[in-house]
Image (cartoon, rainbow, N blue to C red; front, side):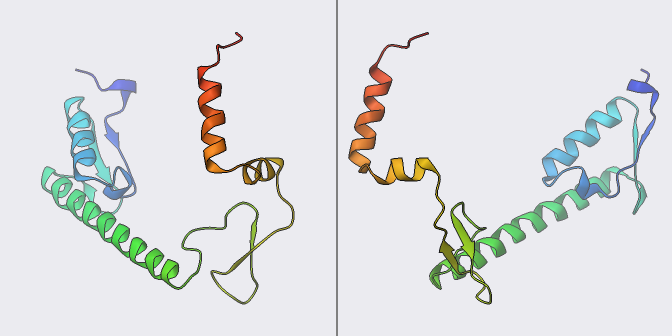
Length: 136
């Protein structure tokens, strides 16, 4: 069978650019091999099956390690009373105090609409909207 689009090789920068999970990288490698397309990574040359398994496993381990470190860092920031994530809408960062934010005076109209009603009133309004027939 002739490879699609007349290509016979694929050149990613590294195998971890193809996917972050071993199953994703292995599936892609199988599809390319089935269509007669060889895989040549810039950093290691032609990629044999063993490299797919080893490097795919390493990429997945790196991703799980990064996830754990990120969650641990965010937990530490939250326990310190700081914002664990990025800047939220309606807040600005305080200069010289990393992780501290202040609410801005400018708010969208929807902020006032939601803050004027209690959660129970909001739920009741939403259930009424769902029960009303659609106009169109």
